[in-house]
Image (tube, rainbow, N blue to C red; front, side, top):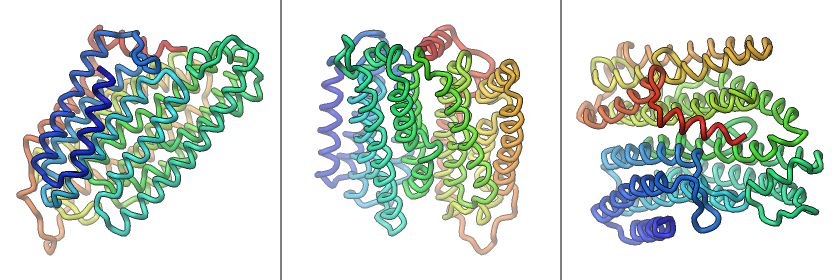
Length: 471
């Protein structure tokens, strides 16, 4: 099934890139998107099995591939409306990039080998670049070059980490770069090599997870890309960055450097949130606002990983809920940009009157992103704060709580401006761009993210626990 999936992705992407026909691109990409849930069923029925030697259907991959299916279907549906003025050539290339990115992320989710993961992560850079450069403008070109350069640099740095990891296999019975072999070898490995490997891989993969130090790559990419693509980049691709770092982190969990690595994670998480706090006070562009919100939320995830124990469950839960909320927020932002003709927050206003249903969606998304009850992020963040107090990390608790207050204030001030400020009378509004049925799809995603705060079905509890139980 996985072989067929990759072949189908290559065929559909090539067809979309070569045949400049909007209908052909819509049908072929629609069929590929419909293939994603079919693959999800296949994976769920073969949980724990390995396919093609390098891909294992574990709980972590299953959880985030399921979320990818949801986000991909929503992004594809929104792209049909959002890209209504594109030429057939532009539309086909966009769909080709979307298909390739979906396939490469899927391969990386299920990869059980550090080298194979690295290859797929590099492939996501090239596929995502097609989406970032979609507008063919000067800003899009600049953002694309920056994205390719920084991501390629990050992946190259991660490769050095893999080389140091491979050194730990010397003198052992393990000869492959599977995560299982690396974990077994790490227990008795040279701590210096392990520290270097972990640092290089954390720095390298930070460009995908959008955390310190290579967080900047996602800010410009999300700004330049079409909004449905931004929704995909900020959720499925960011989740892939988490999965990649999480698997590397798991390999050293039984080694003597794990306590040191936890300290590195705590510092990295705090720096990420600090950066987001500073820039969220100044940002005017709504897409950049959500991009910096991603940096903040992933910083919270890194802190949770640094705590260990219950922190692993908190991290997995937070990333999963964040994917639903952030994708819905970006998708609704696409309608805001279409109606007002701009993403500058101070050139909008009166959205509650212009598009009441859309305003409800954006208010709900902001409630979700700020972890205000009943957001599912409230559950993960309150668990994190409780874990910080239980482990006596009061300084981190105080710093985190203080920065979250500033972040919440920044997000809500922008929300109030969009919904209630008097709009510029000289600005022409494109009210015909309202898409109520697409907004309903966003509200369903937000409803699912909110429901997690109160109720988690048994299958979801088991899936989250199993995904967090890799350590």
